[in-house]
Length: 106
Image (cartoon, rainbow, N blue to C red; front, side, top):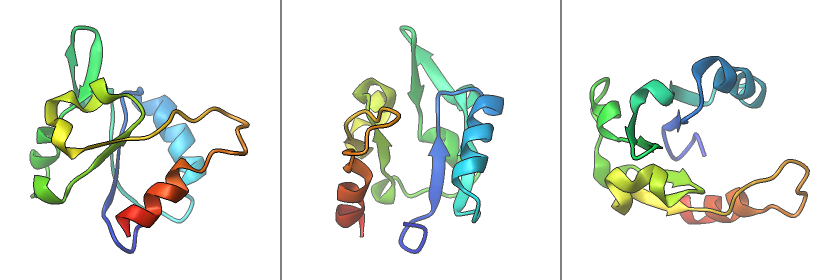
């Protein structure tokens, strides 16, 4: 997807934990930027991803920005930008959610 989109990973995970996983996944350096729990807004115990965190660092056109997440509450601050996918579980060889989404995003 890096050929079509600027890839920014926005996770409610803590930086050290997320970086360990992302470093293993992104060995080619396709992720443009990483945002972590400290960039989320905690609302009623939910770490909400706020796209305004992006605009603090770079020009962001929200009309061209999507949040892909398995939990709608995580993108509640900009629900119109959210795309919900099914949860992924380790070892699930039948999971094709990202492949299906890639066809749409291209």
